[in-house]
Image (cartoon, rainbow, N blue to C red):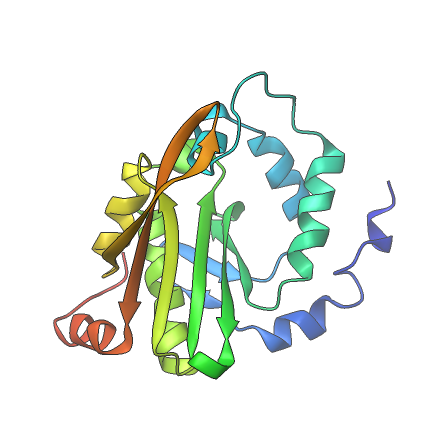
Length: 202
């Protein structure tokens, strides 16, 4: 495949100019570049992560170069989406989907490199994006939904100030079983209080 023909070669400078890099102690959040395809391919597809996203982890097929390329191309179409870079490699991604009229956004994040799970990278990335959402975008609310059994993600979100505000009971059919989603949010005044109390990245 000729990578020079992919989106992001000629148009990458424009994309980067529209979305700032966000720098933490261990992670950098940025727009994707073509070499991220190789990192995504190397991370593969893992049953644990697929299930945490609500997918079917049974009888997984191998993750192909075509899959990685499709991920990259789809990612470029999202205006507020960042790659999570750690130690020079793309290890995950995160995005905001903004509703401007209500000054709110839906948040989603995923670490797809299983060797990097449980190291606090998701927490650091989430805090960086919350800084951007409330300080730069002027949002009032950021919310998310997460499967109730994804306790690691819930712990991360709570550490970042998200509050559980409700359940969507048995709204997801995962591997033949009905599962419940947890609805969580953080408001601008809650974010400001956390920042005043000395919330630091890392």
